[in-house]
Image 1 (cartoon, one colour):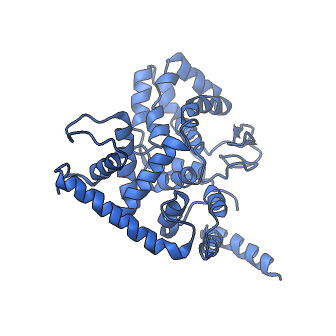
Image 2: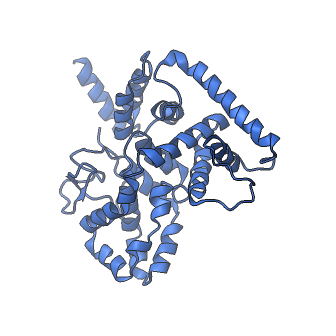
Image 3: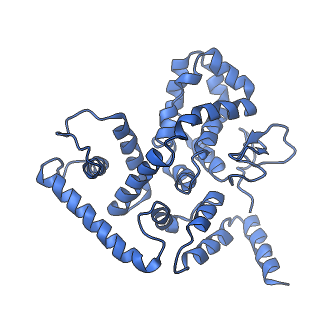
Length: 324
């Protein structure tokens, strides 16, 4: 038996006994052993598979440009990052903009504003819309990343990526959401239009805040793996899956205000499955974002435009996972 066939046999065996991701973790560890990390390969891996928790912060820092691809430079660069963090923090303390009682998320916001040259004259000034986005993302990131320095830098660079790389794409996501929802369930979309709810859906929460404050962190981090590595269209499929998951409830509501209010706070144990199911797809794959039995008659398009089967519904025996 060849080495490849042995590896494939082990992969199938691990999956059958419930240990998914064993081979993926080994593949990532091999990538991380390179003297110079291959950014393209790390992006591809992050798009195809959820990152192991123990490596997520490192991969995010590399992909977001916080540390360079060269391993030998990581320690020195992070030392500079920590020093910069301390200097900015000290500056805010000197001008009495923050105190020991200031929440860490607000500290991160004021540090970001100071470094970007947009710090207001007083912390009592009302927050800008982009500040609300930063705080929501920082609060969620605080639950994912233990180190405060890493949390600040990852949050800052994550938000900067949304404002630069995805600046032109994010405004198009509501229209893409409407198109994909129509493919999945035209009757549900018609109900939303009849209630004049399509234009009032919580797009800011979904697409600008990337579901921070809507989904639990265990699901968010899998979704953000895709966003960090270059695909913000995952946000569209998460939004579609939320509507499909709560279709019965949404169809029972008869006003845009009620529908929007419900969707702004839909968290429940089922939402963990929503985030994890949709975050497991491989962009550009033949099966699309929602992978299930190929005999299904409904389809939903992947980010590349290809068609794939729909997500699991209520009553499914198991949560579908991405194929290897």
